[in-house]
Length: 281
Figure 1 (cartoon, rainbow, N blue to C red):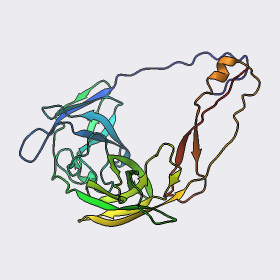
Figure 2 (spheres, rainbow, N blue to C red):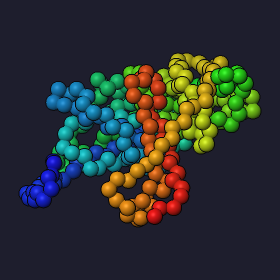
Figure 3 (cartoon, one colour):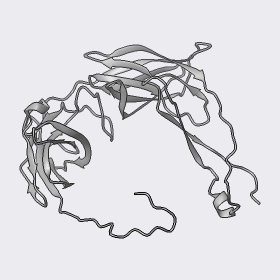
């Protein structure tokens, strides 16, 4: 909607409808409840084709019971566990994940049962018995200065899962390089990954992402070479106003810098913090 100066628009009404609910229980192969497991919901069309996948912030309780609410009426597939094509996605403390399983006990999305959700209705008994736990592996290597090839200590690294040549989500694992520049990241299930340098505060070093794949064994001898980053300077000008209160809001203004036209594996953006000093009059 676009409004012009002085325009008055009325009749912007909304009709609210009651949302639906899906409930069920998640058990392991021994019949024990799976606790604190995140749900994955996939919307499907009338031909049972996947339309949209969502990793939800709904988890099982200490009985393995879950309740997903706030859903629009429609047809869904419900899953838990990690898709091995994506590696280890998700938040919280890193742990060995279960292999992705769809309701009721299907390992593949095409074999999943369709869950119908009605407006204002509750669909219960959508239980899942999870598959096997994915075996975790280790990725290790060194981080060095790209010019001197000397090891760099105390550099924090991050890992992102990759799919279709792009980063799909960052893992809740971090690694700090040792005094010899060595690092080790544990608990990685099979998948494709991107290894990056995490923001280093005042450190101006950067490195291109290092891509690697975990199949059925540990990955060793990864090398990250850093370079000295460039600097951007400038002046922020507030046009058409000398309001001191508004000028004061520019203090510690954050700027985002994005790379245009770079290769797909290049980081999408870097967040900078602009510190304004001086006296506004």
